[in-house]
Length: 251
Ligand code: APR
Image (tube, rainbow, N blue to C red; front, side, top):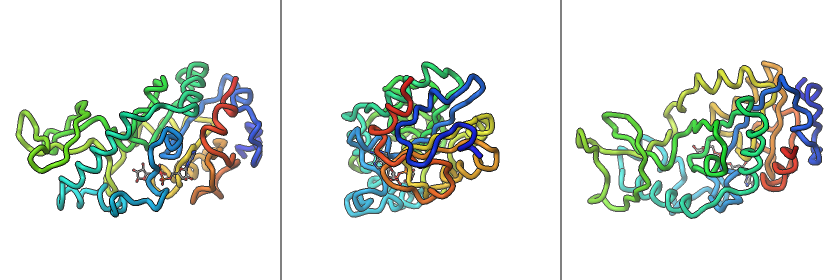
């Protein structure tokens, strides 16, 4: 149904989405680790999906935090270091430029914890899995800006007001993504769902395409390989984010 609405066809990599959007259209963009891959940030499940011999699922969980907070902080400290040296790529910039045209008719929901969308200039960005450069006290819970790197037990941060441990402001496996109500409200009023660079294996984000299908929203996937939920999309544009998005979003 979506394919009829916006006229995007399987493998039609020359299509210009912005030309197809009318004044009533609203674009919901879901991004995953793939959009930052060409900025030099490793995806979660690429390259063997290992970090120092650990699967991400072994360090990004409440259980890992309870068992070994130093390991968890070392993992996120290294990701902070990587993200600080990374720069937004043309795919991030293409989304930011599209938002300048569409204004609040465009909404980016990212599973990424890096800040590359914002550094590219995007304004409406929802970080459903938290933010790398924020931390929060396990007791007080309020997130605060933090780019510190904590590599040893002696240097792990504690809360200035209650002295409880401070953890990364990241949604771990088994935890609930941030502000799902706001995400679903945006999805419900969207007319096009554009998904970029995510393996389609982590829920609830992997299920957005199914919700979109129920609502009659057009759905397009961009990435170099088919995601796990590929069969649910109206159109698959196979290519990297940098290969596809600047042309797709050109206006
Ligand atoms: N351009 C676009 N997509 C790419 C590129 C690229 N240059 N390179 C790789 N990809 C795609 C891969 O084909 C893969 O489908 O990016 C996807 C990366 O998948 P994952 O590593 O599983 O990342 P993601 O889907 O974002 O992970 C979801 O899992 O670990 C948790 O919370 C973490 O937010 C993360 C969530």
